[in-house]
Length: 571
Image (cartoon, rainbow, N blue to C red; front, side):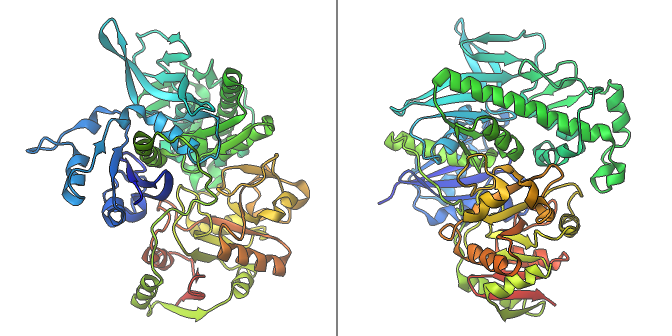
């Protein structure tokens, strides 16, 4: 019988994952069920889905924040111990010390899904675990993990070869020894988060800063943001684990702050300093990450590199690394955000049981729950007064999209991570010159944010500079669109001539692949405009009910259910 380990991330992007005999078989974030963005404590995921598995061991992650160790009244037990014992079979082993090694959990998630036998693992995270060190028989605070480099050798030995910590105490001078660095400044990811906050978003919404960055340029009035691998102390204040902020003392900053976040909805309100700041933080952070990768290679002489942690979702940076290091094999963890630490926790438990550090190959990341077609049909019946339904073929759906109708698609198990990969997607015609503005308006997103494209793998090199990559199945790279193709796919080509792409094969997603094939027969373009099936501020839809409700509260009109060969049209 299979040995199943349940991994839990209790923090933001709360999630649960199950590893069965060393292979990832289930993953879901709490926000998909609670419908609260970045929601923590994945109780619903565990109760509604993880209970369906026979769980042999539980591993709880976290960040070693003191608030994570609060015990419940009366019983004086820890939260998840009580939760597991109430709803699962008694006496399941629960390991809750993994919170001390948050970056290790990121690293395990990345490496054990990479198919590498030997690898560097670079973790770029805002604030991992709070850690201490032994000094003269006393526990002395180090700080919060910001950057870590691990090395897995060919004998499956897992080693920490570099660590950087951030802390808030300015009276503790910078210290370094044996590739361990401690400083009262912001790490690379936290610099990016601080700029994101300055531009009017939550720190976790750094992808919006990335989308804005191509609208900027070099601005001599904006000083250097990162010096010697850390945030410029003349510009930033620290507030770990939350991060930091830009000082309000620079004239260029005061000027742009007057404009505030009005540009989010109105391009005419964008102050050039705001765009230039986004450009600068993208440029400087990716240059610093490149230095870290080169440092890793120098320390190990290994050409396999895994990247995880929140900054791993920066697809512009990922492409920059590949372009500058064409001979390096990269695996960018598609579950790089903190949700992915539940996967790391589950692998941690498996290693504790089996000692088997062999990595896996994942060809797709559809690890969400399985829903029956009967559930689909019953849900549709409950909404039958609001939708017309008809039998439909992929060819007819492709024709509908080619006529510049937005069509949503819902099928199979949901995607792990934040990228929609054809099971919970909004689809459109990539050749529409006004497509970006049109779909951004329908989704109620900021005007400047770009969209992705899904391309048949065998045609990807015709449209995109793959920089030596054979495929991009998880949409983790923003690639250059060949100049002679940019006008043809204007809706998904960003202002800098790039596009975040997903390559797809028939084996990975047969229904989606067939639909793109039919679209190519009509238009000559083997690509569909693809964005996540949600409205701005909402999590990705998870259930068929979520999908139907999203249509009802928006301008979206069509829902394609390929497993039922059915199209629903809002009345």
